[in-house]
Image 1 (cartoon, rainbow, N blue to C red):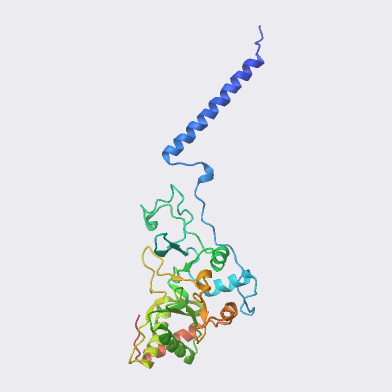
Image 2: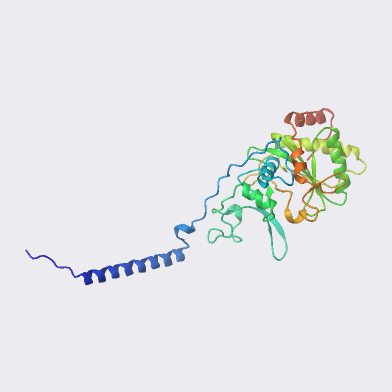
Amino acid sequence: MQTAMFDPEDLKDQLQKALEECKSLREENERLKKLLGLYPEDRVPPKPRISEPHTPYTPANQVTNDSPIETQIALFRSLFRGREDVYPVRWERRKGGSGYSPACANEWNRPFCRKPMVKCSDCENRELKPVIDEVIRDHLLGKQTIGVYPLLPDETCWFLAVDFDKKSWQEDVAIFLRTCSEIGVSAALERSRSGKGGHVWSFFDRPVSASLSRKFGCAILTRSMERRHQIGLDSYDRFFPSQDTMPKGGFGNLIALPLQRGPAGKGNSVFVNGEFEPYVDQWMLLSAIERIQLEKVETIVQEASRNGSQIFY
């Protein structure tokens, strides 16, 4: 029996040809992927991040301008609580115009993002980004401006914000805040981003149904109008949340969050006192805000109903 003999040089040539053929096939594969709109593994759109655990705020701990930002973030999240699975981020066009859109992990990531041809709400590749501490940090540091969707999926909310604008907003807000003080309701006034209006914020100690929250605001608003019936509170615009129930396929109205770094430099998007001057220590004010108990909310609404006061939105 004759033993087969192998030439090392011949084997080396065959191996080299095989490697070159594999390389050619890989290149052809990549070319076809690009033609089909496919991408390699490392370009698959990122999965949405799960909301990371964050340090809860403890009311016993006073927060100030000098507190660590982690503590400030915890306080901020404990007050301005809305949906945590999605948040709106502000955008501006180069040629003018601005607005808010739900933050998406795939925004402008071609070919997964196809706007403006396809609306975000209709996009099958939309990956909503959750609220995490980093998002709040970037907002406070001025790296982005975000808002909050107050209406939770179960149609409850953690706060009520009342929006005032027009020329008479300061006079009307002063009356509204006086009414809050008389009935023992904690409220804080934020001058809006534009400086031409204000938001009165009240926070609850637990989630309150949006319907009850808005009736609570109406009771205070009606009592304030009775004080100024000859003029009326013309600058009142709306409540946040703006709906009792969740709109089909939507998140409800959003409200911009306060303490936006840019506007704050002009005295806007910050909390102001009775003289409409910004508090020197915004964080000390926020840490001192009292959360309104559910029983108090219910009592105020019931009393307004018994007195025949007009409850309107």
